[in-house]
Each structure stands twice: as structure tokens, then as C-alpha cells.
Image 1: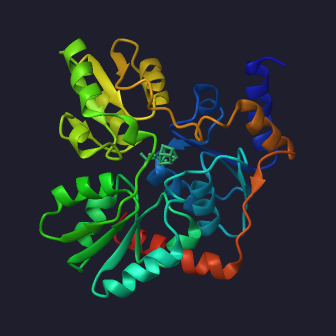
Image 2: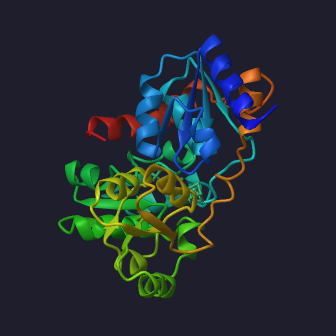
Length: 305
Ligand code: 13P
Ligand code: SF4
């Protein structure tokens, strides 16, 4: 079977079996081409809530599939590759947050969506990279404990100076690899290029950027900009996707090391196995875990996220 034939078969089977395929922007282009929806964590959360398919295949990582399940408990939710986790989501555990809450009783705990569902049960409000600033501004509370990504937290803190935002050490091992020295070197090699980065990057990298935002934010910015060259400071798949979307522009990776090995695990063959009914990992969550973990996602949606 060729790649094209496999894609056609996936498209045929997903229609026949009422399956929705959600694809995170960091997935490869052959998987993008069979998607019902491509997006960042925020867009995928919204699509998960809207979809009326019986089965949803999440091409991304574990916490994303858990979010889909929380918002659609009646659906069968499959993670496209069983081994695809997010190391940042697993950096903190429930006990650690409970201890912090005891020590900081007047703080509301805001969790990046890149957290396990177990951790979400002890958090107050969830945010994504594209909704964090808006939601924290909308919250009536002034004291915020932001977990687990201190780079994203620092980026939010600078934009919401009226609030007291405390951070806990944690972050994305993929984005944290990018250094300010690499950013300066890339700007020197491509002096006319705009630097676009994800806020999971270190603050000293984000400080050098012309724009910081979610994966979808970066892509829209580059597509709409009049500039012709861009250095991309997020997972390197975005460089390829943008180059295909905008052939008249040029895109350069900020760092050859910005590769998320977990996002890269899923292959088109995995998606094919999922639609054939023999692959993926079915997300199992009991009703009480769903109810407890969902509270902070519902709070995000209520604050307009
Ligand atoms: P967004 O999808 O919110 O841009 O986050 C990037 C990321 O690292 C997802 O794991
Ligand atoms: Fe997790 Fe970072 Fe990979 Fe996103 S890019 S899945 S935050 S390790």
C-alpha cells in the first residue's frame, strides 16, 4: 500500500465508522492530511467538546487524549500511539500540589493543560498557551500559583503585572533546549527574518522574539505577516508545515534540537491501525476522576478560554 492509498483508506474508514481524527500541529504532514481538525491544545479542547463522533482518535500525547475523554466521557477515545506521553505533564504529582496549597492557602492553582488528569483534580483553573493570559486576567483572584511550566508562567506574569503569580520549577524539555545564544546566532545568519517562539521557551529566548504564542498563533502570525523570512522557535515540524503552507516565504528552525520525541512517535500506520480497530490505546478514566479533573477545564471554558 502506498502512503496515498493508506490515507484514502483511513479517510474511507473514519467516515464509515463515524470516527473523528484530532491532530496536534506537531504531528507530521501525512497525518495532517487525514485530520478532521488540526490545532493547538486549545483548539483541540474545543473540538473535543463539539465532536459528535462515536470514536475520537487523538494524534498527540496522553494528556490531550485524557482531555478529550473528560469532555466526552461517552465516547471511545484512542491515543494514536500508546507510548506518547508528555514529560512535562508528569513532572509534578498531586501530593506536591496539595502540600503547596496548604502552605499557600490564599492562592488559586492554575494548571497548564499539559498536566495529568490526576493533577488537574487538585487545581482550580486550567489554561492553554493561547488562553493563559486572558483567563488569568479574567480571574477575580489576585494570587495565582502557576504550574508546571515556569517559562510559560513567567511569560504570563510579564503580561499580567497586576497579579501576584508564583511559579514552581518545571517545563517542557523540548523547548527548554533552545538557548539565547542559538537565537542570537540564528538572527545573525538571517537578519531579515522575524523570530517567532512558543512561550514554553526560556525567558531569555522569548525576550529576543518578535512574536510569542501557541503553535496555532505562530502559524497564523507567519501566514498573515508581510515579512518573507521567519525563524521558528518551536517544535521543528512547524517549520515544514509553514513551508508547505507558504511556499513564497522562507522558514528556518531556531534549533536543530527542538524535536519532541513523544509527538514524533505517531506514524500514519498507527492511525491506520486505529481506524481498523486494532491499534492505539483506549483512554479509561472512572467517573469520579473525570468529574474531579474536569472542574478546572470547565472553569477555563467559563472564563472564556
Ligand atoms: P500548544 O499546542 O498549546 O501550542 O502547546 C504546545 C505543546 O507543547 C503541546 O504539547
Ligand atoms: Fe510535552 Fe513539550 Fe512535547 Fe509538548 S513539546 S508534548 S510540552 S514535551
